[in-house]
Length: 70
Image 1 (cartoon, rainbow, N blue to C red):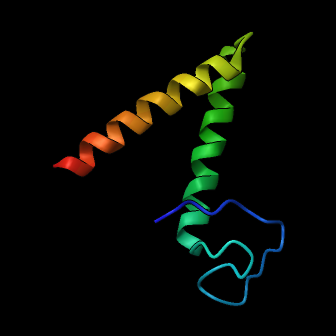
Image 2: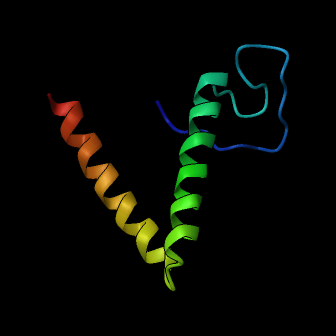
């Protein structure tokens, strides 16, 4: 499945958003993850948050691929 980012055309009348097509559960979980990442960035006040996020992206992608192989 490909990730479908928010399009700004949100609808709330179904189990899936009519704008991006993601399920309500997926949207909620993504919002929670984003909130946690922002809280971490604020807590540690990194001068280079983009480096931290690139590192998280690399690690999460690698771990996801490894988990899919199992």
